[in-house]
Length: 103
Image (cartoon, rainbow, N blue to C red; front, side, top):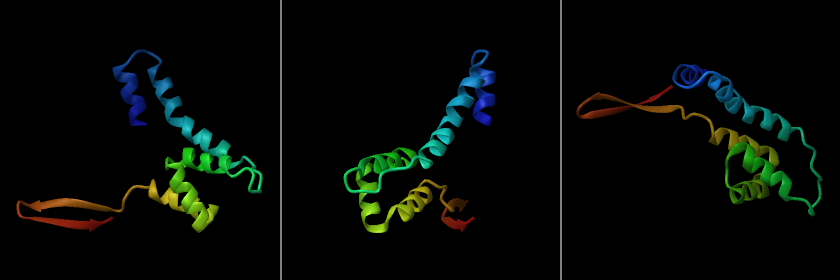
């Protein structure tokens, strides 16, 4: 939402609508790709792999390997987790020590 407000303030009239559309497009595409039915035979393995690669921003070789060893459902879960925000952060306490905090 901050990006939309920034575009509205910094750019020309209507830029906020463009930025909002760009931000929302991956959500629409993800919904579309998740509801596609793929053939379940060995002749058509690529569309499913490429859809996962595109949706979850992972190289196709990684998606293929994970799908081969973990299955499709676990691969989807792993790629979603891999794109999530990390739960650890570093905070400078003083000049000589750093503390690792779990959020």
